[in-house]
Image 1 (cartoon, rainbow, N blue to C red):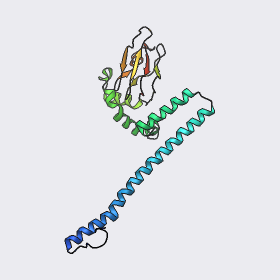
Image 2: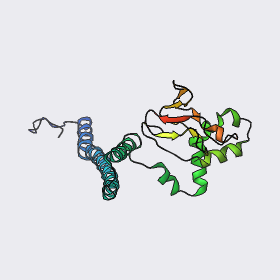
Image 3: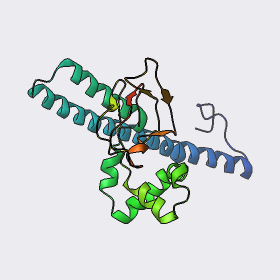
Image 4: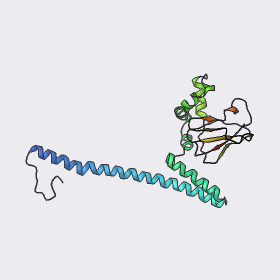
Length: 208
């Protein structure tokens, strides 16, 4: 391994012998370990992909059994495709549900704490109140054209846009009222006393 392949170059002193020994050890031990690690990593990726594909197949078989339309099937397929591309198939809510309450609250504070603290009407609240609000936030995913809030319906939820873009429209206006994107929020009126939604909010892109 340390020669040209025919054995005609051999070490003649202690330095060359040491160098040849290091090369042999590297070639015989380190390199296979690196290759083996890469192979294991790729294998784990395939296992994750297989498990996710199994989940999709199960859902699809159920939908076919209850005879849902092609439009619904397409939406479900796009939903899972987005999950795989952006989150590697990990369902955030399922992970959180497996954790004890103390850890869920801690992780929620890390994920949502900055967003909650940025709200103008919550800046005067103490840290415990903001942490409580951050801990009860639930992850939601909407695909393009989904209606998130319908004008005139009872409002119970406020939404924070982690990723994506939505358009706000009203039956009283032809043009859209506003387009919201990442790190913005809507639906706060239901927390401030208004019971009916004053506008319709639809997803323009995949929204988290």
